[in-house]
Image 1 (cartoon, rainbow, N blue to C red):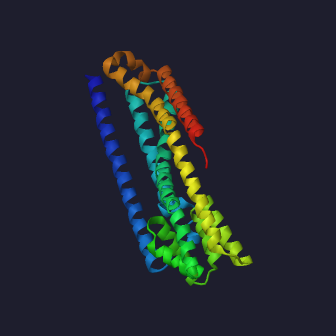
Image 2 (cartoon, helix red, strand yellow):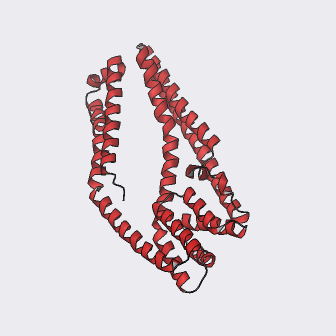
Image 3 (cartoon, rainbow, N blue to C red):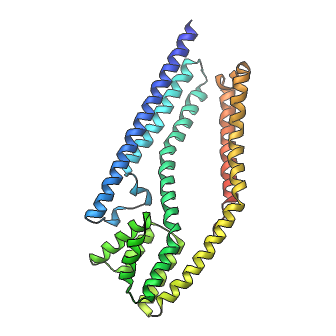
Length: 301
């Protein structure tokens, strides 16, 4: 009877902990989305101070918000796991200390990974428009436009992150900033090898003269060739990325299958200190194997 009461308490505690985590994450993400909308409105109405964006992640979440979210994601799972271990009768001090700390460490990294994923997606959308951006400037220069007019024309036709960044560049230029310096600040906000080369070409052309349109046309051809090579490499390494995911999920899937088929056989794995040490070692090896395979199949172009 006592064991059933403990299990019921554990289920209720787990339920309320899950509700708390979902509520905190939902409220935080809603606050982040609202802050993003306010920031975009401020960009359109007044102009954004680009020096306030220290890192690309600052566009999506403030440092204080990210810190609170990471603390919440670390404390709630760690405390819940500690209570569950105590109620299930675990008396090993190493397990009672190391397991909650490990879960808290993993939980604290989840919000950071989430916002880094948003930064990566925005970077990918930006890089996907660089070829059209370069060709658009080259064609506008050939038609007799000056560089600021070419940037304004291309910015009016652009979409997504490219339009946002060009809007900031043109606004800085209208407020008196040097155009090349504004482009260099864009490169710092959106670090990319193609943009770095493009800004260098524009700076050298403005300082020494020469046909900037011809240089940009050559750069467009180079960017197109790099894009084709990158797509080919991505297709060839797709199998390796899939293998990394499958090999990482296989031990977890095997544990779940054996647990539902023979729970008595698997119970010592999560009710004894030796079992928890084994679980920790397996998770560490899975993580090491996953990141090793991802590193092998990641080829810089």
